[in-house]
Amino acid sequence: MLHAAGVGALMAATAGAGLLSYRAYDNRVLGADRSGAFDGWRRWRDEPGLRGLVAAASLAASPHNTQPWSFHLGDNHIDVYADDARRMGSVDPYARELRLGLGCALENLVLAGQARGFDPQVTLCPDTTRPDLAARVDLPSGAHNETARYRAIGRRHTNRGPYRRQPISDAILAELTSLATGQPTLAWITSEHDRLAMGQLMVEAAQAVTADTDQSRDGFAWFRASADAINAHKDGLTLDGQGLSSLVTAVAKLLPSTSRAAGDAFWVDQTRTVHTRTAAAYGLILVPDPRDPVHQLDGGRLLQRIHLEVTVRGLALQHMNQITERIDRDLSLGRSQTFGPRLAALVGRSDQQVLTAFRLGHPVREGRRSPRRPAPEVLR
Amino acid sequence: MTNRDRAAGTVGVAAGVLGIVAGTAAALWGHDLGAWAGDKQDPAPLGALTVVLAAVAVCVSAAQRQAARRRGLPPGHRAAVAAGQLIPALLGFTTVGRLWWIAGAALTATAALTISVAPAPLGRAVRQHWPAVLTSALGAFLALAGATAAVPLMTMAILSGALIAVAPWQVVRSRRLALLLLMAGSVPLATLTWRTVIMPLTAALALVTGTMALSHQHPTAHRPNPTAT
Image 1: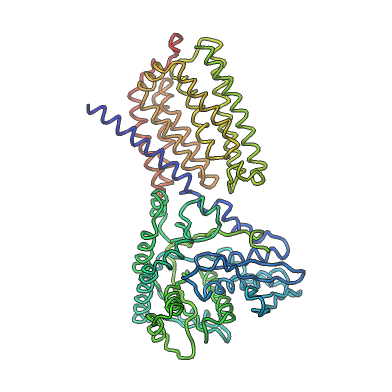
Image 2: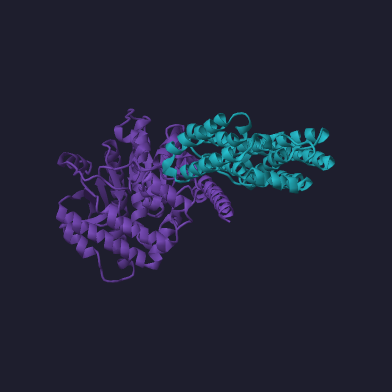
């Protein structure tokens, strides 16, 4: 009897190991970023001609990794278009985040142009009859200028993991601030009191986003829970990008995919226990009008510039947009503002509003690659 | 019985060759073939894997044909042949899409035919060597779990899986050798991949079943019995 039970248990354990091994294979517990959806990170310098600039632009930050861009190659210019089908609906009703992403792509494109011997000249929103045309980048010949920020393009990743309890030096903050020339401007939240207040606001905003069914659904639509979904879409958020330890990531990949409710609960919990608790500083990009497309695009360029500089310095950065997402959501529904006044009080600037926010710190672990559509798939 | 083995071997070889063609086509033209090759992101390595799987099926089926001409398959060998036909048949369905359908279906039928020739002795053989069978299966699972890793780790996982899979069957030669193979296949890989959870657990389970197999099996149990087909 005991022998039969032992044999049965071993056979059941072996069958379980078989199922989990297949799950590990199918969901890529090992070699998550070895599939073609991550080729862009490995080959971005290999693309010839103007496609090389697009390959670099395609590695830029974007909201929920939606990559809301497409590019048209001219003889001596590149047009950058917004892809409104990739806007996150109720999460981004004024296309604030979409244009931030386009601005990030523009910054990479300019850096890649300089590195390849062009002198990129950017015109934002060049044709008022074409609202989807975000920018034209003319490319006259110029000096080859391969900067450290250009070289950091392939290493820049959003880091959602914990950061060390180590403040960012004033010198570094000052150098990052100097990256903003004119509009938009940059503000930092570094004191413990203000960081706690900002963190509380972030947590409450995350809770509000998840309690809003439309926003929750529109955000979750960009979560890619399986290797198949990642390879099919080559965009969106992934388990590997959540900044979890290797062990926890492996367990999460072996378990069945999470529901939207479970994903929301996980995000709020991470915001409370990791993102806000370990932030060494919060950065805020300020503009006079956060719904002005030009300000949005300029803000995106600055955001990417900061992120690349942060990467050069071995620091980590995570974009945190839940507060502004709630501000835009309330505004789009004509409701009274819940978060706007509290954020404005934290910033203390009557002439400027927050376009976007991020946290900064010394990483505990490296950020991971996110899936990318390769250059040929974003050309029009 | 030998006629059915010969027929199974012939169909198995033919299906395996078809599988090799399917794998080669997926490896070379997978992107152009689209849904026919399973719409895979990386059809080349999956196509190559399919070629290897199909080659295993060809080899065991050819061995089955040869054995059918002589004295028939001993039960243990029959189990190995059936596994060599069935496992590639099932895995192939996940690698190259529709290109595998005919080869996979034929190999599955072949495995069923191979088993149907002598199910009772085969069942007895499996029951007699169940710890070794489980250990070999666990070795295959380890190789599968590591198949997506970077090349050095993938190679190590496949080699480790192979060592574990063959270890319990080497007891007829030397118990010490079998134990060495089992340890070499499980301990380093489990240590290196502890963060994956599944690989150290599988390796630990293989150590348990493998150790049982080494103490459970008797060297004479592996000698072919010409009368038992």
